[in-house]
Structure formats: C-alpha cells, structure tokens
Amino acid sequence: MNPKHFLILFAFVTVQATAKNIYVATDGNDNNSGTINSPYATLNKAQSVVTPGDTVYFRGGTYQISESQIMENYGIYARVFKMDKSGTPTQRICYFGYPDERAVFDLSGVKPAGKRVYVFFVSGSYLHFKNFEVVGTQVTILNHTQSECFHHEGGNNCIYENLAMHDGMAVGFYITKGANNLVLNCDAYNNWDNVSEDKKGGNTDGFGGHLNSTGDTGNIFRGCRAWYNSDDGYDLINNKAPVIIENCWAFRNGYSTTGELLANGAGFKSGGYAMRANPNVPNPVPRNVIRFCLAVDNKNQGFYANHHLGGLDFYHNTGYRNPANFNMLNRKNASDPVPSDVPGYEHNIKNNVSYSPRTAESHIVNVNMNESVMSNNSFTLSLALTDADFRSVDMSELTRPRRPDGSLPDIDLMKPAANSQLIDRGADLGFPFDDAAPDLGYSEYRAWYNSDDGVVNGKNGSVAR
Image 1: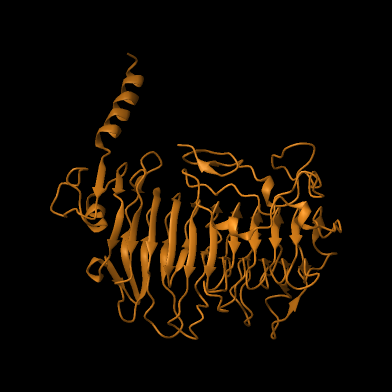
Image 2: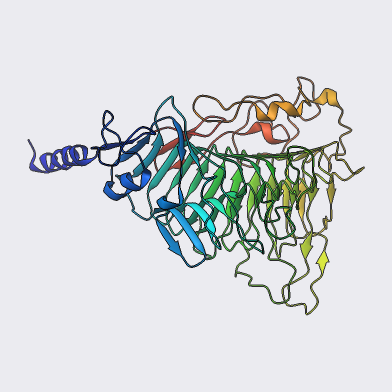
C-alpha cells in the first residue's frame, strides 16, 4: 500500500474508533455508563464527557428540568445548558433526539429570581442540534427583559434542525454572534411573555437575527415556521451582517391563541435600528434577504422594512390577509437630530404576491417606487386576483404536521391554481424554476445552496448527509 494512502486510512479508522454515541433517557441515571442500555439522566452529564465526533442521543419523553441543572449563572443570565464545547469541520458534536422518538425539555420549573433564562446557550462551533423540543420557558423579571430557548453567541458553522420551541414565555431562537449557522426546519409557536412590562410580550419573537459584528455573515433561516408568538415571527432589528430568511412561514403573530391583541405582530420584521437619535449603525448597512416566504394573517405588517437605513431584498414572497402585506418604510438617515421616516428606498422587490390585505389596497405601502427596483409583482403588474387564482385559501393548512424528515408540510395555500394569473409571470432572478418562466410568489422555491454537511436538496431544504 502507498504510505500516503495508509496514513489516510489510519486517520479515518482512528476517527471512527474514537467517536462514540452517548445516550440520555428520562429513566436514566448519571451514575450509568451512558450506553443505550445504561443511559444517563441529564444533558449535564452527557455534556461533561462529550468530545468531537460524538453524538448525544435523547430518548423520547419529557425531561422535567430543575434549577439544580443550571450549568452557569452569569450576571443576570441563567444559562441552563452551556454548550461551549466545539466540534471540528470533520467531526461535529451532535445532540439528537433518538430516531422515531421525540424528546421534550420542560423548563416550567426553572424560575430563577432576577435572571433571564437561556435554555441552550451555544458558543461552540460545528455543533448540530436536531429533533427535540423546548417548552415552558419562564420569565420572572418584571421590567424590560426576555428569556430565550436557544441563544447563539459566538459559535460558527452550527446547524439547528427540526426543533420546536413552544408554549412558553421565551423567544424561540436568538443569534447575536457567529458565522455560517443554519436554522433549518424549526418551529416557534405559542410563546407569550405575560409577566414583564405591560404583559403583552413585546420581546417574544419566534426567531431573532441580531448579529453584533459585520463579520458575522452567512447565517440562514430556512424552512422554519413562526406562529402565535406575542411579538414578531422573525425579527432582524439591530442586525449588523446580512441574514437570509428563505422558505419560511409567519402567521398569526401578535395574537394569543384565544385572540387577544398582544405586541407588534409583524410577520417578517426585516431590518431597522430603532427610532432613536444616533443609533449604532453598521457600515455598510446590511441587505437582509427575504425570499420564498409566506406571511399570513399577522396582527401587523406581513413583510416590514422597519425603518431600515438602506435597501433590503424581497424576492418571491407571498402576503395574505395582513393589514399591509408589504410595508417598506425606511428611516431618512441616522444623523437626523429628530429621527424621521420616509418611503422605502433602495429595496429590490421582485416576483412577490399580495392578496386580500385586511386594509383596503394595502398590497404595498410606504415605498418610493423611483428609488427602489420593483418588477414582476402582482401589485406592479396590477393583477386583479381572486380566490380562483389559488389552489387554496384555507389558512388551517399552515399548522399541518411536518414531513417525517422535518421539512415543511406540502400545502396548497396561496399556490397558483392551474389557470392562475401568477403562472409564468415572474422575472428570471437566477433561481431554478419550472416551465417557461418563474411563477410569482413563494411556491417556486428550490434549494440551490450547499451546506457544509452536504447538498441541500429539493423544495423542502432537507440536509443530505
């Protein structure tokens, strides 16, 4: 054998031999060995022994988390699970729900006084979280605050896949630092902070992208759903690096499950740096990208520029039954002593669909058509759409169960009917499409990116490992 080939083979065998599976179960014991037949009881124990290449499997069932399991109290933050160990480009550390089972971490008993609760505080790189749920996350502080199910701060090249964060008081997923992270096929729903401030849950978004450095690039939300969160579905305020949100859905945000009017309730709050004097604005101002997304029946705008200080890209999105389906409001500039808004400028708005906004004719509002690039949208083509242009207008389809691989359910809502005016009316923006030209709206989605684990295939964006 060629000595070089022998060394490669030896290295591969060594990696395979050192990687191990570690098991955690509701009936486990931390004095066990961590094997499938002798599982640990807590993630705390598994985290203490995990190394690059290892996979921690959570067996199905509900894990009632106690305050004694908080790994770190850091100032006002209770970091319940501190995920600071890193994998490598060739040996990720994986934290997976066991195949065909569903693990649920119940945080309803974790109520540390005076602390913001971060359930999973992630600062490690090359980690993969998949197939489990976080429920019941609490808020105990009465003034301005927030808790978070996943707080990502510093790690690069991580994957969050097929996770559900629901029925608590916390933001589902929140990132402030790190590059090239993928949030894939995750759900955040029924989250409402009814404890702090005015009890309307003004900080409780489904997903938040708030990168604090211009170098924190390459972060993507793909195939996610956000609904019945008391604030926004997706929020990119104070973001200093471009974020992509694609093939994601936002619906009924800003409402409680019983119909109470709560906080802001935008579907996709796509930028902005607040309306204060001298905001901390990055140079350059990032162009966040929202594409192939669906915003339905949110309390406030469907797609919202949120006083941004530059242009944003909106491609192939569909808004339905929001007060305004597209609101492109921008701030005039950052240096004004008295902050003021102007119609949106420098936006790229192409191949989008607006149907039946709750405020008459509010398909798109607050946009400067001379200072933005707008083409091939249902509202710029002046299409007189009716229900007959869509396969379905049934909003109940949005909460159908995900497919077995975690990808979005196959629904008909707002997809063009056979003879729809939306078919083949789009501009070629460089994305794959069927037939003679792209259809308008969200349903023409195809995955065309590679992840660092393999090709991301098909309409639903599942990772091919």
